[in-house]
Image (tube, rainbow, N blue to C red; front, side):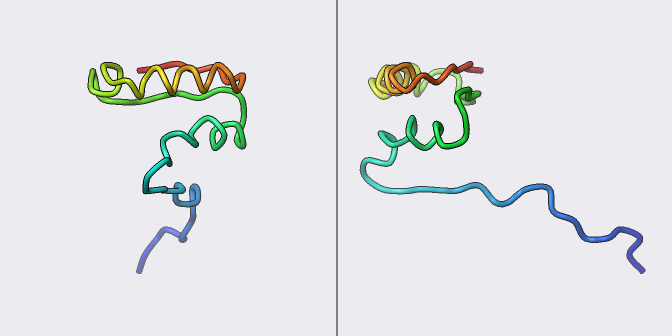
Length: 68
């Protein structure tokens, strides 16, 4: 006998793959609000050209962000 009833905490995250999907992040984030917590590896993204593109896109979209 299982003493716990089934429950759901949240839906599965939306996962996107393919060319150009990174560039859509600011618009995708904006659909959910105007603040985001970015959790990445210690250096790989921050040291790539994509980091500045992401930061610029978030700023241009009016999204506040924190990175850990």
